[in-house]
Amino acid sequence: MHLDTDTQNARQPGPLTDRVALVAGATRGAGRALALELGRSGATVYVTGRTTRERPSEVGRTTETIEETAELVTAAGGTGIAVPTDHLDPDQVRALVDRVDRERGRLDLLVNDLWGGEHLLVGSVFGRKSWETPLDDGLRLLELGVRSHVITAALALPLLIRSESPLHVEVTDGTARSNRRYRENLYYDLAKNAPIRMAFGLGEELAEYGGTAVAVTPGFLRSEQMLTHFGVTEDNWRDACAREPHFAISESPRYLARGVAALAADPERAARWNGRSTSSTELARTYGVRDVDGSQPDALAYFEEVYYGGGDGSADDYR
Image 1 (cartoon, rainbow, N blue to C red):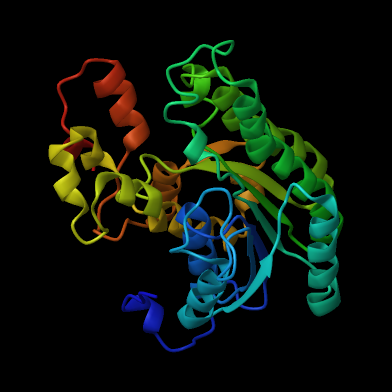
Image 2 (image 1 turned 90 degrees about the vertical axis):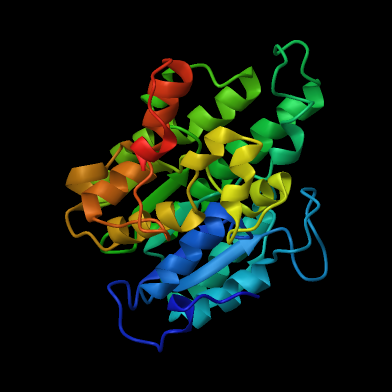
């Protein structure tokens, strides 16, 4: 388990001290980083996922586990609690929510970062028409990216609304604006647009409780799986740009996570964000946070203006 310098800081009261958070889907990637940054801000964070030290999920990775995520949260200054959970099983989610209620009595922040469908994308989904996509694979994407989110929200929101200022965060790929462009495959497009609509609808429902629902997206995420795909690490990730030049606009999972942690500590967040979808870049510019290298990459603008639009800018122009 790697702990950076920030993670080894002594425990100090933070802006989210005494807050209780649940990060659903915190094994790796954005979910792990979100749990870590919420912990760094002082929160108690329940972290869930299907990959444990005893058993991997269908993703097939054994290098990241929810137990490790919980340890990282605690080392960062929060309290990390790992609860193995398959969020497609309502009984497991009910047991999770009951445990949070029993141990803490409330929930202040729910992060729906459930996914785990990357292994289905290359070869099976991307580049195929909907009728060419294996039906079982397409339906699995909808289970992982939509049904799991709906189950978790339905069962956790009754506890969330006990908070004085409930916050529900849907993590997806793209914003309402950027996803006006078709996302390459019908099943993937549906899976990544549904959380945006969930945030919009839940924003309507949470408003009377003083709550906020918002959908957030990273840009080109340097997740553990993406680093493995390119055969690099976070320390030498730029070496992958020789193979994939657009990787130069990528961002670490900490970039989005820092923005969400700042949003969670914002007393005016409902007026700013309720019902909206936003990006790591917009959050960074709003709250003055930066990625681990000190930059503020804007991958959505880069891809819209350069990759799709044919502009002459380089990735450095968008960092």
